[in-house]
Image (cartoon, rainbow, N blue to C red; front, side, top):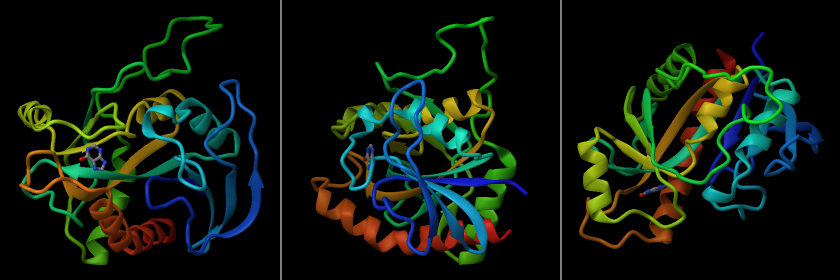
Length: 245
Ligand code: HPA
């Protein structure tokens, strides 16, 4: 049976309903992960949970120790990762409250520690990353969203920006020309590190605001936080469906 891990993003620093049996402080070659890895029962399954930004939410996207997080989950026994990400909507279908299970990504980040394949190598290794997400895992998320009856897109291109500032309207226009549908700050290098560590990985993205220039209004933290509060119940019930199979 596959051991699933959930990486919770903004708005999901705790997994409501997780019956925690163990909290593991995992030491990794890259330092400490964002938080302890919680191991417990959720939806009748043993599951691992890690808060990407720490608990309480305090680590900004560009400071997350992605290498330590992925390493810690692998070390704790994870085989498949369900990553939850809050995003801005670029494509007109990506309105606030909409879900997207991206099938592709473009990495616009810079200066992040992005690989476990740098030091003490026996051989230079290049992972295949043509399809950055696990298709079977994506299909499980899509089936769960369909069963939940929520608005979702079963594919999309995720743009990962550096943050922590939001983008300019011109940057979003450029991402749109590049073919991006949603924009977030935490999808990379997380997805690539999962591939390096041979962990299946898929993303459940919740749109929490129109991306810069896509609405006349200023993007506010209050608006984003409200959208997270409104959407998190659906996120957790979708994850529960995936785990129940
Ligand atoms: N841009 C980048 N990251 C985000 C956004 C956004 O508009 N909303 C939530 N995460």
